[in-house]
Length: 262
Image 1 (cartoon, rainbow, N blue to C red):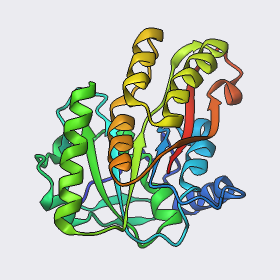
Image 2: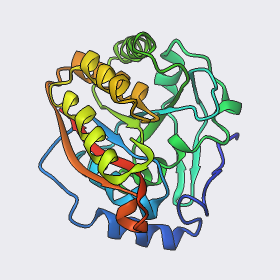
Image 3: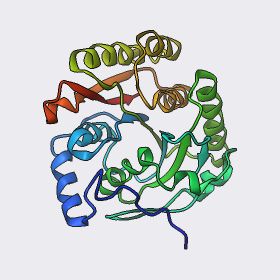
């Protein structure tokens, strides 16, 4: 059986399963909430930098969830939007892909494009640890403009309607400002994130463009918000914000946010 093998284990997160499990246990400690998010925004940097924020995002989904996570991440190598249809390896075990959903979506399957991309892979150990019975639908997003996000959202919604299932949660994989002074990162990122409190996507794009915010996954965020709005979501709540500087002490940082869409 073909699987999508780990590409960044040992770099972004521990390869040793016992070490990884201990780390995730520590990160999820105190992260449970009384929320039931339809979708989340989760960062995808190395776990020492963004892992606590990612755990805060996944903590807004009840731990008993056993449905499917549609995980949308940006292509850092410029590949076109595509889906993966094979199981994904993690050091904690294999995560099965939702084959019914993946065969129902109008997207090309391209396992080569997914092979080395970290934006999706970094989310998988969090899912495997907290939701061991869940399945996934990994989607790599190329063009991230507003129209592309609308089109992708429409294709995902069509697929969900075809399979007639409600046991779906969405994950947008994104970091925010990249390598800017910490005060600039916090001010600009929170300015953009505030537009998501009312799920105002045109304003979110406007703020990203006006401030030239170097968020790498604004397209996946827009697609996830659009899908969640069509399914009844009305608000986006910032759960946690942090920067790499909180760990490194460096003056130039990358911003990370955990956002729940409800």
